[in-house]
Amino acid sequence: MKKVKIFDTTLRDGEQSPGCSMSKEDKIRIAKQLDEMGVDVIEAGFAASNQKDFEAIKEIAKVVKRATVVSLARCNKKDIDKAYESVRDAVHPKIHVFIATSDIHMYYKLRMDREEVIEKVRECVTYAKGKCDEIEFSLEDATRSNPDFACRVIDTAIECGANTINIPDTVGYITNEEFKNFIVYLKCNSRLDEVELSVHCHNDLGLATANSLMAVMCGANQVECTVNGIGERAGNAAMEEIVAAIKTRSDIFDAYTNIDTRKIKMISNMVIEATGSMVQNNKAVVGENAFKHESGIHQAGVISERQTYELMDPSEYGIEEDSIVIGIHSGKAAIVDKIQKMGMNPFDYEIDEIVKDIKSYCESSKSVPDEKFFEIVSANKKYRIALNKAM
Ligand code: KIV
Ligand code: ZN
Image (cartoon, rainbow, N blue to C red; front, side, top):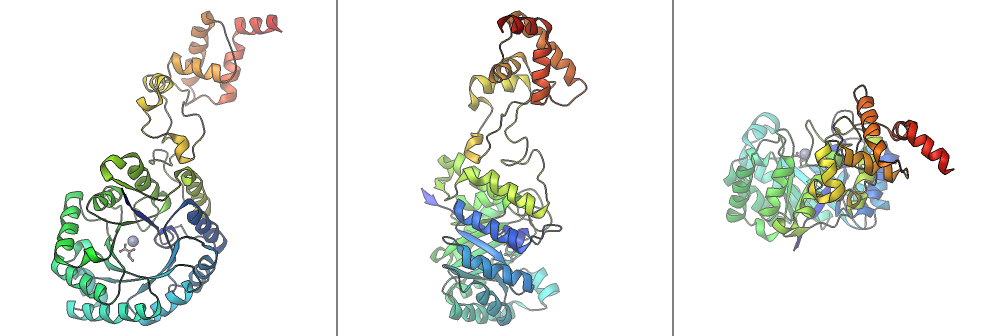
């Protein structure tokens, strides 16, 4: 099986999303946890963007033990100097240089033509390589770039020393099949196979995870992602989704990651706490309801055999709480199971009455909290008498 590196950009692209800025202390805590859970590359920030970011990256570079620490730089010497300065103390430092390669970005944003962009890539990747052995080069808006021009840019960056080439879907534009064809085209028409291939997908059409996984199938060695999928606009590919998909369907990806999945819920909570940005209840893997069941049919299935309705074992993702939610759709099997788990033992003939009481409570409440559940069961008159007699 091939290893897929996880490049986490929660602290850079994630932090760039509205309302997601984090304190230096929180960033350091998160970086340490990312390192411990097996993330291969941590993009700690964009050093030239502001002094606070620069200082946070510098601190992170000192505390991270295993992972490579990366700082982002535009294609200019000042940015590259700052980026290198911020990561130079890391055990494994890396500079991430990027420039836009789509006609729309080059014309309206950079005011440069194709030849000028090629020259900038040559100049800046060579300059960055003179400072740091490890260089990642990104073609911003790659998926809307002319494929033959993208191949020329890739070859120039590789010739000047880039170790990793990153293909971003910057505005979340590309569809699954198109991304496959684009990557295959780049691999067949450039020197891409000589270096590490990374992808960086945004989620504007909800395709970030699917596109990243398609790239893995096409040979990508690295996926760029964020915890909880935070990031510009609709966010980046979510780390927990990429990791869970590769782990759960290793049969088709023939790949693995280095991530200790039991730490996933914890890092998700840390990012929620640091940014104040919640995840929706039905968010894959880390959402409140990701492993919960309320319908009677599903509950009976899970009680009999977990895998009937649970694709993944929640404890493998750091989720220990009970997956059965007692609500209006619950059936007798789940209610009896919960009664037993709570250590109570009503007579068989009382169960129907208890089920009726619980259902009637659920008509006015969404679900039954544990205390209320206990109260309803023990308030059953005959059951109380039985308990009293036994005492
Ligand atoms: O989305 C993007 O293109 C980026 C690059 C800077 C890699 O974040
Ligand atoms: Zn991005």
